[in-house]
Image 1 (cartoon, helix red, strand yellow):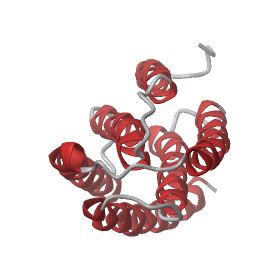
Image 2 (cartoon, one colour):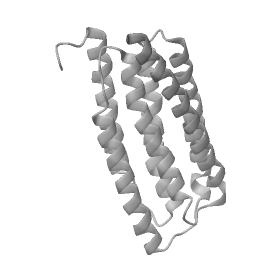
Image 3 (cartoon, one colour):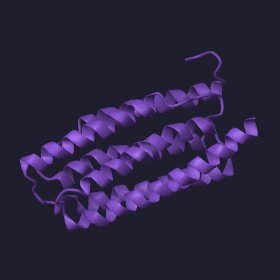
Length: 189
């Protein structure tokens, strides 16, 4: 850990890096099935779980009220999304052909590797608020791209509304975080 980081920043970043490693491990070892709906759920739940834990980590350190609100919103929305996916999991028996499975998995590999790399290399400094936003935006872009990709294939009916909700809410989060990031940078200058 770079010595220029404060003790709080070091603790925050150590937790973030641990959560990121767990997320990558869980997503790359997710069970792949002949149903893209179920495969997606197996991949998305650890991604959501990581966002929840990242947000809880931030809340230990930040006093920035708009960012506290965003973090609480992420926790609430992604906890509900996990529950919604778990509730339909055994109902999502829509089978996909091997061509679609291979195509989806190829796209997933590109999306997830870009997301993992962006999150590993996210800009960090002693302003934990700025670090969090740089970490969470690529996370959300990954979830949005995964959801939009899955919508190109036959999936179980129950999953459509969950996907559109993921896309809508995480696009809103990105807009809020991007606006806040500009304000945080302008106050530092």
